[in-house]
Length: 130
Image (cartoon, rainbow, N blue to C red; front, top):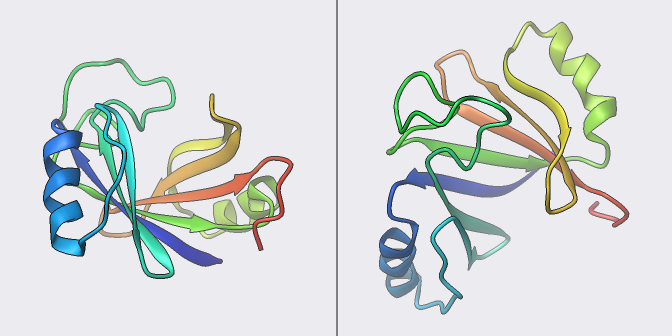
């Protein structure tokens, strides 16, 4: 597994991404839902509340959704999400959602670590990501 991103969950993606863009002296295209900033070998990501849910109801940031404002999600890349699912499930992790093909083509699954932090496991479909 390779750490590829730490992602901040926020209601104002543009403002937080602009702050870190200035901090890191990096330019990026802004939008209201998801932004990545290069930060060495990994990236800093910013996603809007309710953008990380698989099929949870859209009820605002808070404990009842996958991610709330102020949360940080660590993203790990693997060659095959489905191959990792059984191994991780055997560890007794708390799943937010299992292997899912995202609208942008990536395959991912999300879990919580023992302290409740969000961990996203992702692989890209049709691309070598090793």
